[in-house]
Image (tube, rainbow, N blue to C red):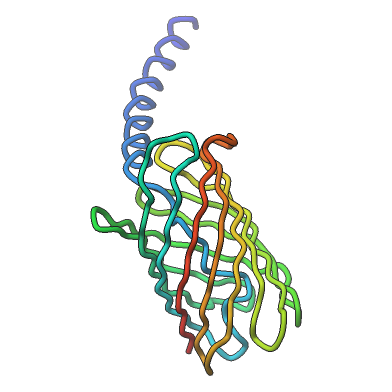
Length: 201
């Protein structure tokens, strides 16, 4: 019996090590999109699709000699059911790009409040959060999405707060600030600033 158990552990170890290496290479090659920009309130009544394009700037950490980060973000969202939205997401900069998918499950959708759960997965990144939105007036919403994602191999906590401003019949301008903490520690704090235009149909 001892020989069998030892052999089984050895076989499991043979498969586990390549899997761990593959995961490290995949996650180490990128990070989650640097902004949220897809609030729980995103799709208006009567609109089932949204396309958005944004830009993000991220400050250096206070105690690290590193440059500002700049990236673009593109997404296409589709309402699948009354409570589920699916998205294709791309984040890119001059040196690299990543693709992924996202899902938003709306547990609550009322006249002035929307909230639920959000998850995303792509090459080099994964994230999960709780999107919450409060309607300020007409079709303009204040939103936040506390989330956990990754920066390379390290987990990161992010708390974005944004404004989804209705500017035309089917167009929104989104302005967002986020504070993030890589590895959940204070000295790894960064500031994210994002702006985007989203159009629905």
